[in-house]
Every structure is written in structure tokens, then in C-alpha cells.
Length: 282
Image 1 (cartoon, helix red, strand yellow):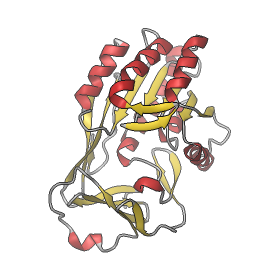
Image 2 (cartoon, one colour):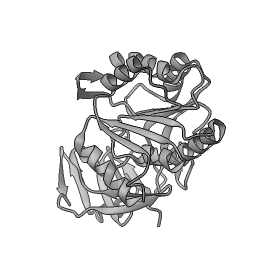
Image 3 (tube, helix red, strand yellow):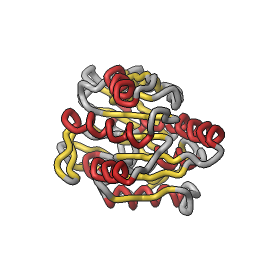
């Protein structure tokens, strides 16, 4: 059984296998009817109307994916510690970091923003990068450190910084800091040093990031889950602000039942390309 698998989606919900745990939670893009009705009755965790209605006290459990060991547990907002669609990009980040290291003759410096529990950051570290991991949530940072420990990277080359992404990047720009790679997953809305709104704040952030990497970044990866920000729009933002070639696509997951579910989008400079596991295409 795969560690991560979408079993079914429909009626505004998704049924996912995270290791040994089956989870039923909202999916606004799942507009078709459910296909495998008996499977839903086996869910051990259910998130409905803003809270876990089943399994809220479930003990943490671990997944092994893309060379990492990650801890999952029921958290606020219906999250469990990682976005399954993002995991398709992690092998590409590891390879992109290795390639940058070989070309530079030193560990590349990678900046990971809105970095959550560290899957992307740790993937870059696996490839030999020095990673600056920035997230405004201290609980998310603690979770990321736990994932580093489980993955054998507790003493790895990752700086874990609790900070607002915009404030940190402006400060780094004033300092004249340089990075070789950028990874960011901006939310639609957020609260840091002032409220974040992707429509208003992302362009200025990308301009500041372009100044940090200069004219030839080794890789840029931008992901989003905001309606209206499909793969081509994200790719256009990367091309315009970083002046580099980029492509992008929607994340589309195919369920075991045959249902299809769109979950955000990604855009990247040539590497990293997503890896496409069974029943998942990006």
C-alpha cells in the first residue's frame, strides 16, 4: 500500500490514505458524486465544519516518503502535517540541489518561505543544500525540527527561523545576502507583520526575491492553493519577476476510484520537475 494515496473524492470531500490512517476531510474542488461509498465508512479521522469530529486524539504517526520520515497528526484547519501533492516535487528539489552543488563546487544556499513543516526544506538539505527555512508559525517550526530528527537531519544544514516572510526577505535584501535557489508556498491570506494578501503582496515579494538570487538562480519553485492561480499564471509570475524560463501546471490527483481532484498549482524554472507516482499526476 502506498504511504500516500487518494482513495476517492466527491461531494466536496476527499478520502486519503496517510500510511495506516484513513482520513475524510473537505475538498472544495470535488464537485462530482463520490464513487466508492463503502470506503468512506472506514475513515479513522474526519474533519467537518471546522473541527475533527472523529480521531482528534489520534496519536502521531509517521510516513516515509521521498527519502524523508515525517510525522503526521490531526492539526487545526484539517491539516495533518503535509500536502500530498507537494511531495511529488520533493525528489526534484533534492536533485536540483545536487545539481547546483556540483555546478557551484559548494553547498547551494536555498531560501524556503512559508515553509510549514519542512518537507521541501529537508528535501533540499538531502541534496546537499544549506537551507534557510522561514515560517511565521512557531508550532510549524517545531514540527519541522521533529521531521528533521526523524529523517536523520537533526544536525543538518537547516536554519529554522520564526519570521514573517516579507519582513525577512526585505532584511536579507538590505544585508546584501545572496541565495542560489528559492522555494515558496504563499497562502491566500495570512497574518505576520501585517496581514498577507496574495494578490497585493506576492508581486513585491517576488521582486525582492529576484534581488536575492540575481540574474541566474539555479532553481525557483512557486506553489499555491489560491483559486485563480493556476500553473500558467504562476509560471508567468516566475518568468516576469526572475527573468528566467519557467513552466507550470495544476496539481491533479487521480484517485483509486477513478475520481480526479485538483489541488492547487506549481511553477518552476527548469528543475525541479514533479515526480508522478501511481494515480497522481502533476
